[in-house]
Every structure is written in structure tokens, then in C-alpha cells.
Image 1: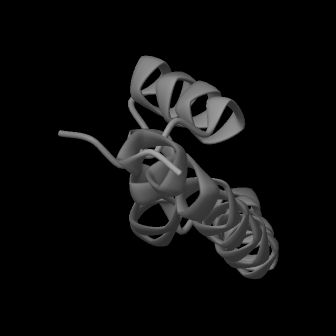
Image 2: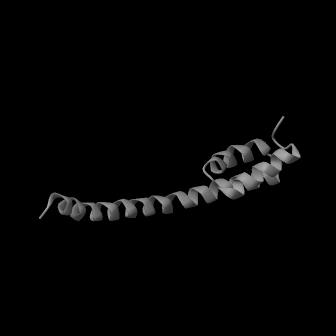
Image 3: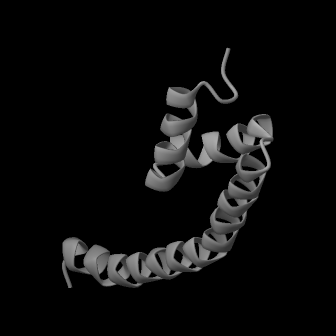
Length: 82
């Protein structure tokens, strides 16, 4: 067996293991994201803009479109910004 074939033989299982770990970690992350978004939503509804920004900014920076949208609306309305 050639060295290249041996490398491919070991690479496929390792890729599968990495994929399973990534999928598992994503399932753990989703409830945290949803919880943070909901906390920000509740804070925004009662006028606690500082908490809403604190909860939504990391989500927005990570690419959460809803958090980005809500932060944009808050900034447009002058809520929680100077």
C-alpha cells in the first residue's frame, strides 16, 4: 500500500469524527443563542436598552441576522446609544 493511500485511509475517519464533534457543539450552542436573543428581546420591550445591547451585540458580531436587525433598529431610534 502506498503512503498516500494510507494517509487517505486514516483521513476519512478523522474527518468524520471532526464533523460529529462540530455537529454536537453546534447543538449545544443553539439554545444559548436563542436564550441570549430572548433575554435581549425581553429587555428591549421594557426599555432596558443596555441589557438588550449587551445580549445582542455578541450574537450580531457572530452573524445572527435577527440580532443585527434589532441593533440596527435600536440605533436608528436612538435607543441605548448617545
